[in-house]
Amino acid sequence: MKLKKLSLMMLLLSAFVFTACNDDDKKEIIVVNFNDKLTTADSTFSTDQGVEDTSNPYGSTFVYQFKDSQNAIEFNHFYSDWGYGASFSGGFTYTNTTDKTTLDFSNLSAITAKGTSGSVYLTSNTSEFSVARITNLKSDNFKFKGAWITNTTYAYLVIKEGNAFASKFNDGDWFILTATGYSADDKVIGKVDFYLADYRNGNTEAFDTWRWFDWSAIGNADYIKFTMSSSDTHPEYGMNTPAYFCMDAITLEEK
Image (cartoon, rainbow, N blue to C red; front, side, top):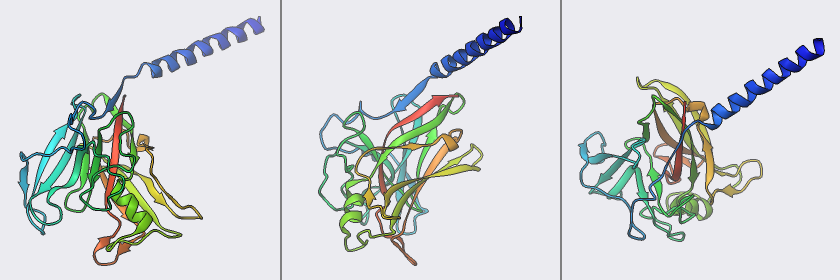
């Protein structure tokens, strides 16, 4: 009798676990990309529909918000018509450029020269006055799961070769992308780091492939801000390593 009861309990437990797994499998997933955009080769999104932002002490910039075709995520996009940041100057843009050799700030190409599943991907430049930000427009029902990340050609070649502004990476150097999650009332709920280059502990790795950046620790954020830090930093003027990265296939998971 006891054996039969035990068998019945095990059967019920197995059914519960199976049902739970099935429930997880049925959760809807949204993958955000821009593969339906930019029909012209080697092109980059731009606009003149932004609102003027006068908070930048170096000159006025314009800020525009764009969304993916599923209206799942909103991205900020900064541009200007002055100085070295003319045209795209911060936040996010999307591009299908394929330049893996030009070491210049105007080169917005990923070092991979393509996205994870198509030719179009996001490029970001983030700074104190144009912080890259994404907003979950479906936060009532979906949470952030993560995204695929890689270096831009510009940042990658600076790390490998150096230039007039930044040093070639040596033993002990590092380059980090930080994602900070915020609630709708602007409170920090957590942050996670991603090494775009890691020369610590005998490593000599600057990423030239797409890598998964797990956001499960900040999944319930209403929006995420991205900042960057580097071991190559000037005490007065800040980070020397170019504050650029590329992103693709941002993934949301049903709560």
